[in-house]
Length: 194
Image (cartoon, rainbow, N blue to C red; front, side, top):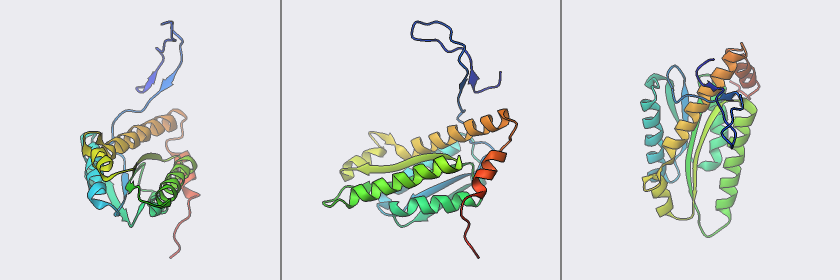
């Protein structure tokens, strides 16, 4: 049985179930990753980017295969993430931003649309996506999630993308696809005309 597949699962009573379980490893080696980050609230987002880079480094990513893409705000994240993925250079996307609640409903609109757009991208393309867009009521909450008390959500999002990229690669290899499904999914993405 290949690494990442387990068959020793037990039910609630401790009885062997024989259920095959597929999991990815935390290894970024040999894969390309795009970090897509907003500039708005950059004093927070820069810390998230640092956390993502740290996770990639710790899991064996080749620095030459990691690229950072910046956009103005969280609303632009889905579009930029889609364009970065359409280059075909990445097995994983790490999407980072920070939206802090203000006195108007703008917060809800921005967070909802950014989340919806990134979720659709992950579902449509089959690319490994780590979502690290903070939606906080206060600046203090954002600071806590960018490397203080509550950890670093950029690091966490990168670990999700790393594990899922490995899992997708294992599933592709198991199906004898070796990435063909991923390539066909990506070719459906809109490309910028020259």
